[in-house]
Amino acid sequence: MLNSKLFPCSGVRERSTWRAFILILFTLLAVGGIILSLTKGALYISLNDIILAIFSDSSGSNRQVIWNIRLPRTLVGALVGVNLALAGAILQGVMKNPLADPHIIGISSGAGLAGVTIMVLFPHKEYLVTPIAFMGAMFAAIFIYILAWKGGIRPVRIILAGVAVSAFLNSGISALMVFYSDRVHGALMWMVGGLSARSWPHLDIIFPYTVVGGILAILGAGRLNILNLGDDIARGLGLNVEVSRIAMTAVASLLAASAVSVVGLLGFVGLIVPHAARLLVGSDYRYLLPASAILGVAVVTLSDTLARVAFSPIEIPVGIIMAFVGAPFFLYLLRRDA
Amino acid sequence: MAIMKAENLSVDFYEKSVLKNLTIAVEKGQIVSILGPNGSGKSTLLKTLSRNLKPNKGSVYLDDNNLAELSAKFIARKMAVLPQSPEAPKDLTVRDLVEYGRYPHQSWWQGKSQEDDQCVDWALVQTELLDMSSRIVSTLSGGERQRVWIAMALAQKPEILLLDEPTTYLDICHQLEIMELLADFNRNHDITVAMVLHDINHAARYSDCVAVVHQGKIFAMGKPEDVITVHTLRVVFGVESEIQIDHVGKLVVMITGLTKKRG
Image (cartoon, rainbow over all chains, first blue to last red; front, top):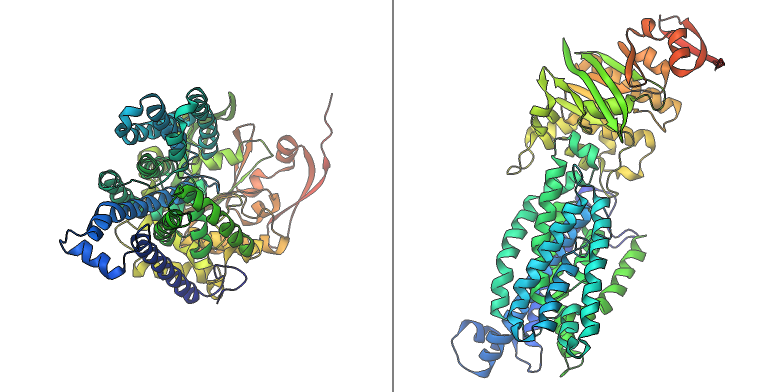
């Protein structure tokens, strides 16, 4: 069934069957990832025991491990995957640039500088990292927007302003790391992005953004499709191009900022997952957004499981695993499609 | 009656004024061609009429309503625009693309209606694309691709169609195919057509009205035989020409050389 092009080029019926097949495949991967993430770890717990631990009120050690550690961590990972993948998919469409991802609009560098500042300068106030990082991310995104504004927003100006502002903020991060080199370990872990010790409070933070951002993204799918035809055509079809671009970028900023502030600068998901989804289901956002979100869940949960068990008992940050396994896979997809 | 008019338009680019207090009216039911040399402002004029540029001064009116005060979707239900060499995502089928033409008629809470399907079918039939409807647009030839974009504009069910050099990059046969197609919509479906053209003979053959833009102003406007003259071609384009009438009574322009600049 896999022909030379990944996404079939002929036959309308063949295409919708293919899309359904890929969506089901992604869903299976996501469910598999969640189950693996719950069962595997320092302590192996069978699926039966997990269900028992979640749905009955036993006070055994299984219940402790599942309820307090693995379940919230898995759920946080899943939502982070959804948010970053959706943000990346939206931004690639809005900016009409294949390299657009949450880094481009300053989310990562803004959250990075804010988070690292707290961790390095006020290590006893670690609980502030998430809210301050979120504010840093949004502040950087808005700042880039203001810089790029000139009677409207042009994607190229946003991208250039984003690169410049990110470079500026990153130099701040580097400076902090150099001056306080004795305290950088925690900051370093956070900079690569990891899910270790993420629990219910983090889930409470990210959950509303996932729900609201996810709904807004899906509602915007039609607009993104029109925007992809080019500004002139989109305007001719009656789309308010400037407003749509700003609104969708704002949605992407909220999605990405909430994810990054919770788990650190997980870079890979927002860039590669939407691309992989696009190669497999095509550029129609009505399919691309759900496909990206589900694939995001699969990628983050599977990578996190691997991160925990690969060098057990040492745990490596999920960001490293994701880039290490994902980048070659992505290159494989790219070569196949060319 | 004018379906569209622009009054006292001025458009500046980086301090340089491209359109200077320009006024133009497009009569309902006509084919209007806009001619002019490079840099005369003809594309800028079309972009301003199609809302892709905001004028620094002056207003554009659609059915006597100021364009700036109408909602984007309302305008798109009356006016379709085809810019120069548009580009679609690589994996769209012909039908996918033509369906986007229904966007201004849809609201976000409802999917496509039966009427949408009928309009898309109709547009595909008019452009003779029905049996290509599941082909991928990016694999088609230039002429076929241009027909797909025109079909998308038709699916909008517009009263007026604006086009910016619709025949660029096409060979002579496909150029005529596009011109015939537009003439047919105009005649049989009562669609007003206003377009920027490069080819003076196409303009002479197919238009009811020709507007010549020169240095940001309308140099002359009216019936082709009144406007396209040896004098116009010499002053505006800087070329010498001979003009004849063919057996169906249409103008044929032969360019014989460059006008020698004096001094």
